[in-house]
Image 1 (tube, rainbow, N blue to C red):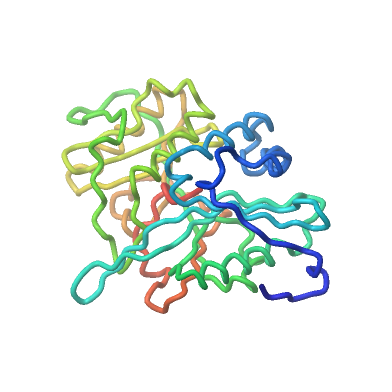
Image 2 (image 1 turned 45 degrees about the vertical axis):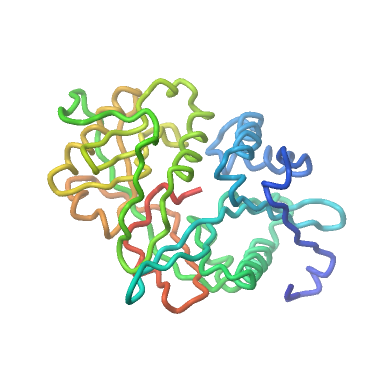
Length: 316
């Protein structure tokens, strides 16, 4: 591990694999509680800590969640989580599969915000690269702070917004589970394989925050076209997690989401704007977000400009 300053000489960065522990470690519970206001969008501390503990036992977590902790003089002052994902890319003769990671929860105790995000971000990046990962990515606000260590690419994010509808569209099949899920086709030069386990993790997190949504549909489909949604963490909209459509099915599926937003008492449906969906989202209002999409690739063949479909299902 590289030491940039004497300030880090008494630091220790370590990690635990979720699959090796039955329960979320006690030593991060206090950080979970502190993180509630920022990472939980104002959620009560106990509720946020409970959700973090519950998700520890989710199959997607057991498959590849790693909890990274920075310790200073016996005190845990920062934690990051990474989740393993599958990177798909075109090769001359086939589709290649490799390892990637998404940064989930990342939190430094307020009293210790003195460059530790840069330090731990850089250390994690170098560790994953040494293990053969091809990229690491995240949606974050602290892009400038970690750029000098992680050396990533950044892209601004925008949000498409549609008002809710009172009338349900016809011809859609409502979804209550992901049992019939089929993998999305590879979009662009590379993508991150969006799996049912990944989406179910997101849906479970939303359901823990909004148990009243447990009887509501999680999406809709028309043939091989899908839309998957959940109430947004800031409690004001229905968030589209996955959108796979054709020209003839796109507007109807979006209407299904807008109708569901109204059924949940929400004012709107929202989704990320990205190159793969621009043509379908032309009628939506656009809002600039303060977050950015960050990608750090360990091979020159993976460039952020070639990632054509960063679905909301990749935001942890």
